[in-house]
Image 1 (cartoon, one colour):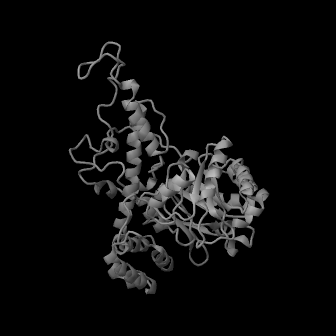
Image 2 (cartoon, helix red, strand yellow):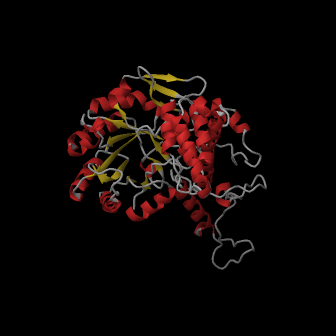
Length: 457
């Protein structure tokens, strides 16, 4: 699973209880030395599983749960440039939630703990407005994605979304303007749909890639297709190969008919895409079962704590379904879902929430994000000892560490038998770390407690 190397959020300086909540089985990093964590770049979009941008469903609580359950990056729902430009940025002094408020309520909310993983999707048909909107929110995000795929009239009637597919000059001018206006540590990407002709699709892809984007997401349906129509993911492999043939080392991300971690593996096999873009906030290889027990209560508590609007909260909960729900739990899942949809406020679902302890749910999520950085820092420290250039992919860095640590550089020279000391011509390895990092060995060298292996999220 792709894990990002990202700046430690300042929020942790305001949450001392996070460290106090660590169990005794969790030891501190093996060195006090800190590694400089880099920003997003084109590598950040490879070997990952991402939360797709979804209107209404991609709310702050959904994004935080996606990160908790293994998402590498999360996309905010599309926000129209003019709407965000007329909003006011307000920070809640208690929760740290950043709200961009309209005349009656928040247009969009975020939190500093998701910033290293957060991509903001812009709806625009004007390069100048797109840049103004990006500058308005750039302090709270790590990347911008231009929506060139939404087929809904509210987007296309103003020349935005999928309407840009038939106006490639405007589409590319917006991307070029964003790339020129944004600092290099902020990525610019685009999401498109397939054109009816594969030849025309490749021509468009070529133009987009040449604007300097860090990644391209392809929704494998045409503008006229809807979710009920099967996505044509088989067309994506040619696009992936085409981009590679251009000599552009950027990720091509698949979107469409991908519902979670299991689908992600299938999509990779069929398309060759660098990363899939599921639409459900569950990305762990260990799927959630009985959503009414494992997700709904906590989602309710967190939503109330973060002041997520009630109507938005219950809409999101109505969308959450798991194919892994136990047979004897399906009726209860349905009952809880119907009860939440009929409720008129958070007070009506207090019994389901089991107490309003959303601050604890938030600290748990913040802690899981903190542990992500700690794990990657361990690998980076270890890779520095091996003189391996660190990358943003935990899996690729892990493979390099293991390969280098067991490769020719540290093998006993030919003619020297173990367990006797190596001969005089053996490479000097006195500075080689005596223990592997916890997430490689599965054992914590500082305590005898077993630590879950890397594949467990």
